[in-house]
Picture 1 (cartoon, one colour):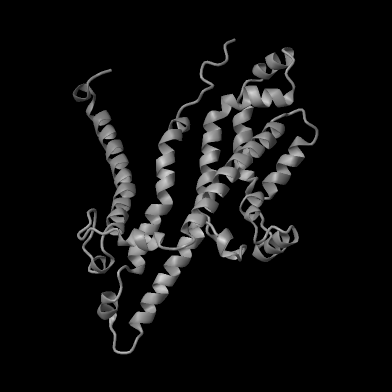
Picture 2 (picture 1 turned 45 degrees about the vertical axis):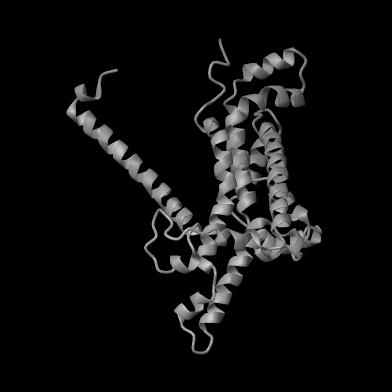
Length: 302
């Protein structure tokens, strides 16, 4: 490999432009997150003055104390953790089984079933029919409303089916010669060789479950069954309503209202964002390698 200073001028300009674009893209992602982190650890009243970018001006953890002061926060965290773990594991396993069946070109009606699944990606019944369906299945106001309706995703199914089709058929043929049935081949051959796509689909499902506040807000009435995202959304709504109420009080302007508040809606919002995204950021490095690395390399030799 030639040193950079010995490469032609045109190639050096091209490399410089590529690195510049990558750097700008990274900064566009990292800098807003640093700003949110700084505002979450800054005193709410002080943050209203503005001028905070990447470092808190008045350090405070009052924003996080206010978020965790709710009596239902532990229960909500448990609900979110349960639905994320159980929902992700069940969805990945069942989606992989469906994708393994659809990858077979000899299965009768495989094209029809694939087209039928793809059709669901184009049209939706709407919110009211969907609610009526959940109610008729007795899923509303239960913890299973978070898991059962999201077990299958047509998009994830097609992604996994496409990956399974890239696995060389000779592996399955060799396994059948050794006496393996379809389920044994799926568990001992297909799944171990599909770690990259399993990691990607698992991450998609986990992020979707963890960040979903809509289901808890519209399909669950019990406060004890609401996940963390829904609870935090309600807390933000109450904080904004309290601020509006104080500002609308007779003879009180915005600055007088701020003096009576320990935190603001904006500061709580930043703390909420950090609480929601922190688990995903912690987990992501452990599965990031599967996005770029394939375990199929060198597994087939003919």
